[in-house]
Image (tube, rainbow, N blue to C red; front, top):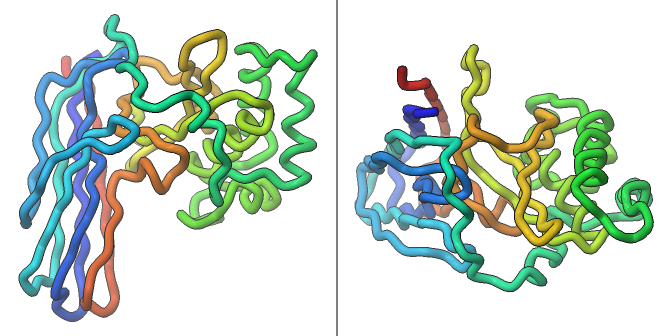
Length: 261
């Protein structure tokens, strides 16, 4: 499948911003079943490329003159469903067993996770059952949570979005001794109902990474395009940063994904 993607992010401010620095995790890479045919970042500032500890392609955006807007466009074409294995891991698997503030378990989550431990050996079948159970337990509802909502908080609320589903699944995996990581990216849908970035999880089981799109109850496959991975949302979110000045911030995000015929 050939997917054309355009991802626009615009920040507007009530008063001039003196300084902005943003980390852009908006560049997909070859591997894990995808091949990047072309890709471009367009910004109204200076960008500097580098790679982070997780192997993600990062661009640092710096704007050091007064401005009232930050405009970021990622645009390109990605072929999915191709025979390209994941890139070599840059970190030991033990790193992906670490709990973070967004993926720590409380007693309720620990008790929930234990239902899927079986005889102590967790396999893909049990992880698929865990994925479905998380989705059944937590209704998908926009606006119910925010970027700072932890897995335990979202699980207690019984609702959330793809970020929360991924965090809960990851928290349970790590509690069961299964290395797991957060994935940010895009999801193609025929009717175009998904208009923002998507998130899912990878789990290391049976000597390989396997992807679980918890919100949709399926394996991540040819309709997914991955951008970045990390321990949680904070490591892999498409755009993050700080500014000095600007007053009230207004953000607008638009994602368009179409299949090339």
